[in-house]
Image 1: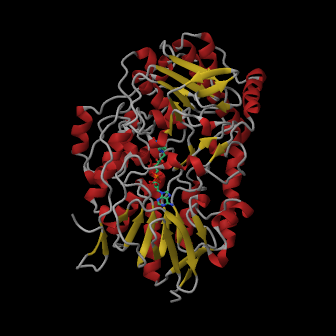
Image 2 (image 1 turned 90 degrees about the horizontal axis):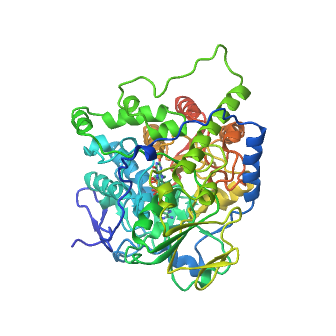
Image 3 (image 1 turned 135 degrees about the vertical axis):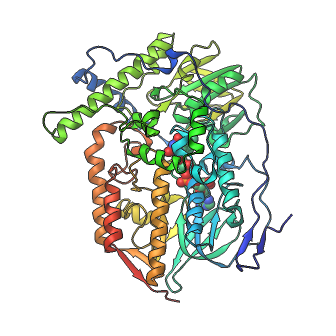
Length: 621
Ligand SMILES: Cc1cc2nc3c(=O)[nH]c(=O)nc-3n(C[C@H](O)[C@H](O)[C@H](O)COP(=O)(O)OP(=O)(O)OC[C@H]3O[C@@H](n4cnc5c(N)ncnc54)[C@H](O)[C@@H]3O)c2cc1C
């Protein structure tokens, strides 16, 4: 086997061999299966006369208010740090610490890192180094391997570089395991592995004004210098736990869904799962197939929309094999769909370019006012949620369980989910929903969970408690000009970026898909493409102009941050609930996800043509 680090005699650059071996081949539940029962793959008719009247609005309000302040999460620190262990790979490949220079250092080897490498290397940037906490590529799809995992955005639009790799996903919604394999395919094909330091967590990134370089320190003792740092470290990458009294006392086995250890045999066990968000919705039907008893502890129900999974057809395979650029064209059509449900259900005729639009559009005699438009959107959301609630009644037999599974908030306010087997799972005799609304599980003891005075003894406890959302400023210590950290800047001024990609005072630092990141699509891959293209443009522009440093001016950053705040406020009624999207109801408007749709493109195009927002500088060293 090659050494972990060697020098390429042709380029003089370091070549790495740090990919870790797989720890295990064991998996169960390979993602969504095809459900043929039509009653499960279609929403019931809209209930007659459904209007979002004062009575219904009051129900939504009460639902939200009851949960205010209930979300209490904690980082995995101290005795809970063990939940972060990498269970998927053998121990890290040994290597000496690095103390050298590179031109571009990228944090993360998920879709972001992989796509950046393909685009940067194509544009002639080859002195690029990646640091990745995990033992292999994949990011989200490396860390999340729970049974039933699959993408929720159709795989033909979601998987990057399908045209370039010639790969066609097997299902409309590919399993996470297939997506992980695709990540490995992209890495192999474009030589990514040679450039990546796996099992290497960046702990501190500090700007050195004198040399115009970032000093990057890692948990492997590295102290590298890079002219540019790109943060492609994901928006849902740091798992979190609900803070529950007594959780340290539990004597059984416990883990978080993003570290699923298949060596823990769940067959015949009594298992409890805390949380009913997007992960749990996918995992629960698969868990129910193998465990003896399953207790699902729910605080807030998800909206369970239809999935309607299908295999890729032979006709699609034939057509795409003869249609270069088919995936790119499809992704671009997908990006034009601005409604979450229409996007995720993805009309095949529209996406294949056979019809012009994804729905028939209603024409109004006059242009609607913003208030009227908002009301129409709220009404439509309400009607859809009525169908979603009716679906629960149509499928779940026990009325008490059905009542608890009905969500009362606007569609898409919390992460919408899609499944045709989740609701029927609650009709199984060994599956129990424990409704802990509105405050959530309050106590854990050595035997299991206690709720409302009832003890639920468990062999295994699974935390499906999600991730920190958009935590760019906290992923590691980032210290910019004048010793100011990104966390300090954003805590004192609020999240403040230009295009989500630059933040003033942190020259040559670029953030991919972070707060205010824009892109205007529900498909994160689309945003990652937009950001990667932008960064290649930025680096090429600097190269052409002989510039080595880029920062942004205050005024364009303030204007962009204001825009993010304004669109967040203007669209807030559509997201009036407590959700990770809005920092559990506490985030300042405009500080997290971007709601301005394609207006991001306008800001970008303007900036690229005038170069006015940028402060370009020469190499100080
Ligand atoms: C279960 C799940 C399902 C999802 N499904 C969809 C979907 O259907 N459609 C969709 O559009 N989006 C989906 N997402 C969002 C998904 O995260 C993005 O689509 C996309 O995969 C993000 O890619 P990324 O490269 O930006 O980030 P990630 O995939 O999160 O990769 C970031 C990488 O950075 C590494 N990293 C972080 N910090 C450090 C550090 N300090 N040092 C070194 N390495 C570090 C992490 O280990 C990680 O591997 C899903 C997310 C989850 C969790």
